[in-house]
Every structure is written in C-alpha cells, then in structure tokens.
Image 1 (cartoon, rainbow, N blue to C red):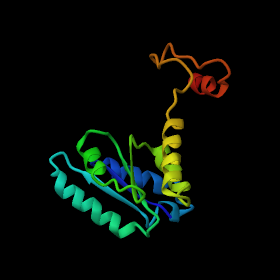
Image 2: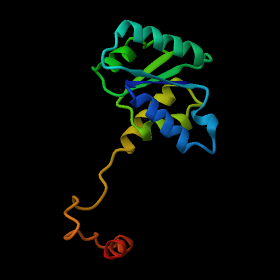
Image 3: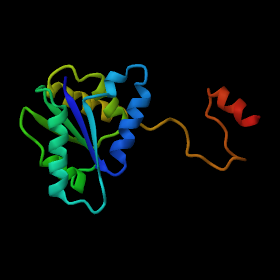
Length: 156
C-alpha cells in the first residue's frame, strides 16, 4: 500500500492528518500506520527537515512507494518535499487540501502513479464555489430560492 507523508507549514500537516483521522474514525486503518506528518517550523533548516522526512519515509514505506504531499510549492516545506523525489519510489504533489488527502487515503491500494492521479483529481474536485451570494449583514440576508430550510432558520 502506498504510504503518505504530509510536509507542510506547522501545524498544517498534523492538522490535516487529525482531520483525516476524524473523517475515517470508522476505518482507522485508512489514516493509520502508513501516514506520517512533518510540520515545518518558520525557522526550519531545510537540510535537517530533509533528513527528518527521509527517516519518516523509511519508517512507513513497505516498498510500494510513498506519496509526499506538501502545501505550497516554492516555500520551505515544498522545497523539502522536492528534494525527496525518487522516480518510481517517491512522488510529490503540492497544494495539499483535505479533499485531496481523503481521496489519497481511500485509494492508495494501487500504484504510485495511480495514487498521484487520485491526489490531483481529489484536490481539484474538492475546490469549488458554493452557490449563492456573498454573505450580507444579518438583517438583509435572505436564502437563495429553493433553500427553504435556510429561510426558516433565518426567520427563527
């Protein structure tokens, strides 16, 4: 099974893993032993973070490969992650969000390439604009047509 390492600005990596554990509380193996986090502090030394990340990968990779997910390409965590790429063994995807992580944790039984594809589709499909107008002040706000529960709640 593909292992997952989250490398992000502190405390984002841990927060994402904690959120995934919450979502998959009924299936703890999904967010369990092959998921690790590396929260990168603001004053982090890239070399020491790369060594820490390599140690984490060594602890979780069963030979199937590891997907490293990072928050921002070009920032320190992204630079750490980029240094981990090892063709066919370690892949890196930047722009991690919760939908992306959940998709990866649910579908990491295939190849590393397939898992990267799931990450990219989960991340992009998880970003959308929710229909409706921007929030206005409480007195003038009304629910969009067809949202009777919101309208009822607003009137109470």
